[in-house]
Length: 381
DNA sequence: AAAACGGGGTA
DNA sequence: TACCCAGTTTT
Image (cartoon, rainbow, N blue to C red):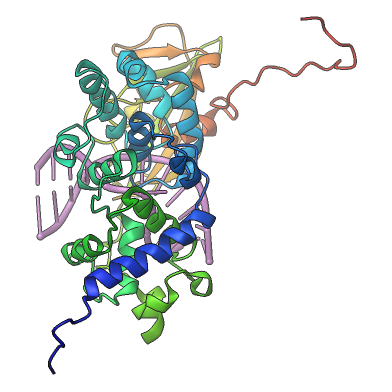
């Protein structure tokens, strides 16, 4: 078949149609997020703060929006500028990051802030320069370039992979399909509002084009979607099957001083839960159920078995038998006592909070300021 | 190219 | 439960 001389250019038309429809949808249906400048404010001339964009993007790496919101607010209130974050003790940053996971992000966050602050406090606005900063990979460099600086970067995250593979019925399994997806997105990025386009694609993926049971009837791109026309969008993207998770087991030891302080130690800076705090544990090996005991306790004491906790990491499951004992004041080398009021604020990953909770229920919960009971009497300022 | 790296939201 | 999320770094 021959094409007319003035053939329709599918690339140009797709760019106009799809991006235009998507942006119109986004103008009305965008999510309100603490780090986002909504389209009507951008139209008024409000400029995004690259520091906030960067902080949100780091937090959002492999982390859901819902989980990030509270952490983002706390970080911004405590460290409103990149200079403030750069000046913060690393320990404070790790404590504030506790519970968010992927703790190398927190170390890289601090390192990146120091580099940017030392370079004058301005984030670079090009992908190669952004890519050179610690913790910023291909996705985040493109996202910051697009969202903070409105550059026509090719932003591809998990949402956009899903939207794109459905739009074009891409059967190539991920991650093999990544180059193809990049090429498609590159053709879709509009010259105007590329930052909003990236965010609109992600909002679409998060609210309409969801992994399961996508709401295709509400989709602004339903007329463009190959998967919807030809079959079932939920079948995309195709992924390689994941290897099953092995199980590791061990024991955790919660030593309690008379005043309620708990014995902690700090993990090495690199590796699993790097730089975070923990209660003493045995090694986590593939030993059999029930094989752990108190033989590997940090010191001899009357260790009481308090139960077992389970935790799931990316690449293995973990079961810890939890033991508790009273203790004198002496802390073994490399260990320290954390007072009851300090426990909640320690750099404890979730698995360690679980272990402590198993031994001392409530110990890791924040002690709220006791509510005044007699509010019927007004106090003077 | 593959593995390491957390935790939680969602159906 | 099982899946997967605004991925990056290391091996």
